[in-house]
Length: 81
Length: 81
Length: 153
Length: 153
Figure 1 (cartoon, rainbow over the protein chains, first blue to last red):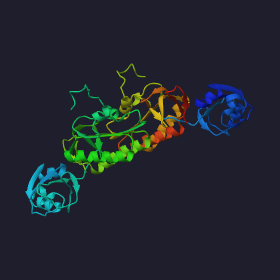
Figure 2: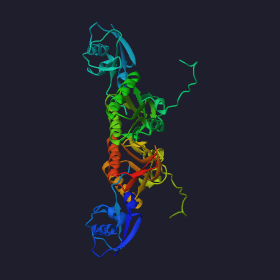
Figure 3: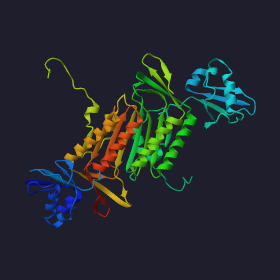
Figure 4: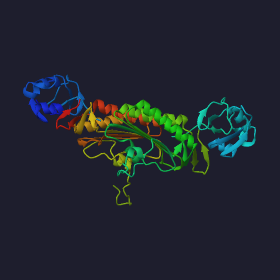
């Protein structure tokens, strides 16, 4: 199934992209998808193993199981205000 | 000695004056002066026996001893803001 | 002094243009209060505004008269602001209380505290309004639609 | 609907003119934020402003870039405001967070809470800024005088 990754701030700089898509096996969790992204190597391998994530714009646990076409956002520590 | 009373809000309405002067014996306390003022009768007698007071613009205790020409303000419960 | 020696023009300084504690009969300019505390070093500004409500205890209010022991109120407000400033540390504070006849919606009190950090700014503004309620010698008389009026305590 | 039957002109309503939770690239109009929550029933208004400071950790800052996961940030800010409103009860709240390139002194966040009473207004404004710091998906990158930059965490 296809997962759309969204990257912000420091993570965007590391990966060098705002978004990218990867195909992961059905039944993959958010953690699995992050592992797949880090396995691309380069700056992506410097992403944290367990980042804060949102699935389809909602904060989610890393053990959450993804569905086809989910948007998985990797969120650096927030710094608003 | 002469004491200048200052009256505000409800107390002003009771006494019917913004300020007035009374002569009280040397050594009088603020409480003594209030008693003298209440003894004038009329609306003044409806002043509380132990109001909050300020002497020369500073909050003071009723047992404070007055000096000649002191300004003694009788302060209803404040309601600013 | 020394006016013979050099050309010195007055520097316009918003912060010193507004007293940190003021009892006034004029309408309160909220934007000016905010401007007076703002500075590049202060990342956080807390502003509190008290306004005249259209009702109190369920009774419709047509207006409000604020009376004060003006000379003492100026001193007490300055004292309250100084206490808050001492606790807050770095930053700027302005507190203004209006007296006289006010209409519904008019700002009766404005308190602004600016600090490098948000907690001290909030705490300062909160402290000042609480202390005003406790000890500023100001009284208010509500005017009602039927023409009657009452001093609040 | 029913436009054929009677002349109904749109009512200008400041409160509905401004969304209660907004992520924007425009400069924040503080006066408009205050106006949006003000009402004759609300005797207390608490406003919090966050502004870009000229330095951080002792290092001079030349500017700040705010980035966000905009679609999610709008939802999260609306959620935070709704939580504060539920606790506050009667009143009005507006919270605006600016994103994009900001200069020193620019307002990055404005939160206004108006209530019949002061404690709920203060508490609502404070709650919202604390929750923004915890969970609003916004990031900031400081620009320094030497041309370098850094994402804050």
